[in-house]
Image (cartoon, rainbow over all chains, first blue to last red; front, side, top):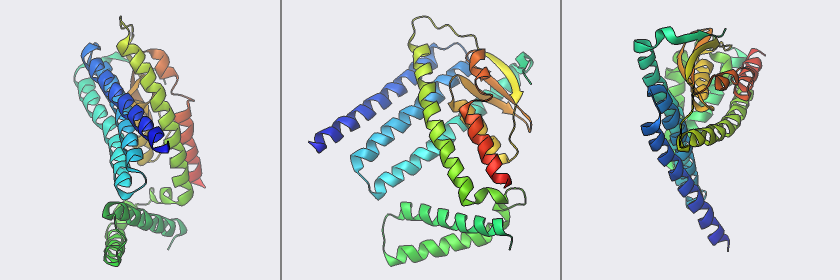
Length: 104
Length: 167
């Protein structure tokens, strides 16, 4: 019985993780400009990776392999927004410098 | 040796050793010895790189706990952000009013500033674009998303970290 519950949880996590990846991809196509597209891909892919890897960790049980997966997850969570920031910044510096509204 | 530098060295050593242990995946004596030697060497040789004067205090254990609290807040915000993104992307007509705004940036330490930028990118409807010592330019899907940053849970968690740092 426990085994079945575990499999159901793993399946749920994997499927919902893939769902967010798909939404990220659709957003990349549908949204209007570079910045909005970065919103879709960074956010959806971050949670997608989180769900898929959590599913894999539960599938593995508590072992060194699952700890390794957790380390990979932390790196993805750090690098994903950094990459988005680099892309957004280069686009901003080249084309959108005058559009900033002062809110300080 | 100053107290906070000693704390920093101890924390760094155990972090490195723990990381080694996760990657090594075995408990054999040879692995443990290699891990201890490697961790000590890294601490000794990168000592002056990692512990420059302003950065020292951040490595104490209490501050690490605050970072963990930040991580929990961040996970909640990431889930909220995704619900928002899914709503926008899957709606038949996309209705957003994107724009940039420069807002105040209250953090002092460089590590915190970098993490703050990343966290803004991961929270609902906002994207950190460029940043200086006292301000940050944010792109928002709507301007209300940008309003939500100041005084929001992420900013509170970061301010708590810097408070703990000063003690």
